[in-house]
Image (cartoon, rainbow, N blue to C red; front, side, top):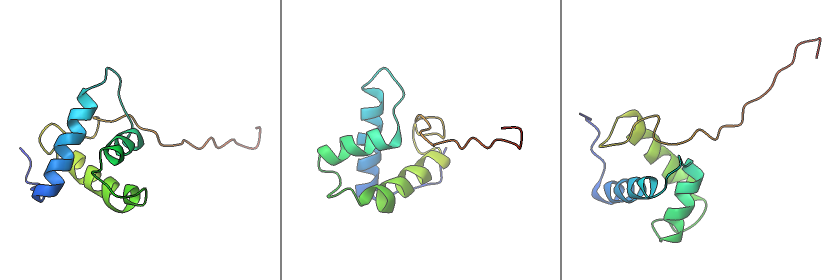
Length: 87
């Protein structure tokens, strides 16, 4: 059970976002999810991705809010390949 209690508008975004996650058979990324919410006018512009959406989503996932958990979305982080002196 989560102690996280988002504002009603944030809870609405998270509920719709989870509905979108469950609407497809594959694991989606945060960016995919944001653009779907942007299309449905949950956000006004692309700037909201870093300023509003990612912090909201991160808090929900780390707090295990409702069905959210750290593994809900696919990780789209770019991984750096660091090679030693032997290349």
